[in-house]
Length: 456
Image (cartoon, rainbow, N blue to C red; front, side):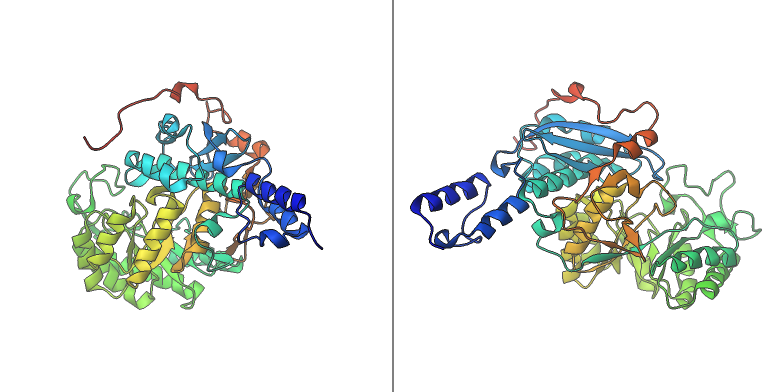
């Protein structure tokens, strides 16, 4: 149907107001009612992306999920809010200290905001605030433009993401195998188990260690400096333990492993050799990631894939480990690595060098959805961890998506804008950490100021 000049002008004005260019929607001379309808459906009418500004940051700290996790909410001048999460076990202060530095910024400029605040992140939980803000900015940008986060990262390689689950250990290998078999019966196709010095404490002659030294790692001492080693008897016991698990679950399903204790490199190598017959998917964090030369010694001495990364902040240190040949696989935690975009960059760097990526995760559905979008947009992802299968109210913390979120060992990647979820206060409020409120005002962080520039 022919359009009047006035009609075309009005349509051009409409698209400008919606924050869209007419190019890529349709030629200005052939704009149709479907074009207008599509724009209305795909762009939030409450938001003009170019004028979106951050006005507030608040926190709600959830406990028992099964970890303690601070969820952050970033509010804007246009009535839309975005959600992020400080990594499990970390302090909400890591996020709150960033409030005065991001208020007034346009959250759609995700990379700009991230570069402004990333100097306040560090490895492990200390990165939690920076990563939580980055998650929330992607959520806001997606809501503002009406597109899912994975689309802004370049699109997706998969519609659903394979999950793997760690499993609380029992001392008897066959009993542990039956517990893992139950996970398989519920649809999981990738498993992980912990085994190490905690299974050897009551076995005479299984460990060598100085008197008075604990095997719990509570002394905050890195592995090479504890004086703890596993004897041949201890290695044999752990090999028999994993053999019993394999008898129950079979050899077909991938079985990864973690938590061996703070043991020396020689023990790590002997233990890895003993596991080769069980064809483990990987052995995780055998020594601290900072000691890449020691990790390379282990990798060079065994056929079992060696993996690390859940405590590394930013791409650079992943790149060092990959380039020195210290790892077969990487294992970033998005809530420590730098958020969605940085984790995708890490995965892409690894892929170019033939290294696969699994993803560590132990938080609420907020961070889970951020991980799903990143995993969908990163080609070399093998599986995403899920720590909350036994928490009955975990999925009910969020709304907006079909339930269950996890089905047959996979999670579907949502097409909804941003991260794809809203929060359910009726579920979250009963599970707040004692003394914490539900996104209460944080004016005490409005004027935290310093001269942050890192150069003169």
